[in-house]
Length: 299
Image (tube, rainbow, N blue to C red; front, side):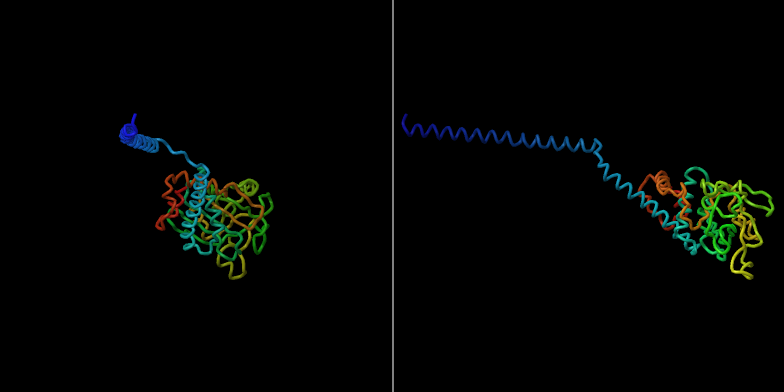
């Protein structure tokens, strides 16, 4: 075969090979594109119609932050209202009282919107009893209250639940029924913190009126009188106070004590109650116009 013929055949082969490659590309490229589109569409369909796996570590961390923020935001909003009404009520004391109130309400022990706080760390010459209506955003009363003589004369520094100690007992109480006793109409109290105030009934610790409590006492001395352990109030105000707080409202008696502890001060359970009633996290920020009780209802 001559060189020129071989060259012609080679060229013809190359031409045929080139045409084949072009044909192959024209078929292969659309096939690849079709396959790619099929994979993308399938992946997108699965992404839309199948649940995505959750990074539990990140998710739980976010939930923890939200829960902490919810409790803090709720407290700050409520205290902002309360402070305007009761500027001398300490934020730490109110926080404890409010957390306890939330837990007691969550447990079904109270459905009253009334929260009463006695801060025995304040000198008895100052009004240190607050009665707050969380539902109506109102301070019902801020007045004097006596402590037990066994706790100290000028200031309450010692606390006990022992019979005959004449000392005040710290912690959470539910108000009970009224009765007529040696101090006239009085209100029974049920202590809820075991080891700190659960002997209240047995000791006869009640809320009653007393002549030695009231602004008029300060005309002759620099302190209120002292009781046998009862939170005694002004005689002219006793009926008003009893009617405001009777029948299972929360009373919190605070005092400076390194020993006091309470299951009702558990912030985690208070937060859980908030989360249970506030499933939508978008409601975790409380509007300024929300009432104290509505803020509490985010529990």
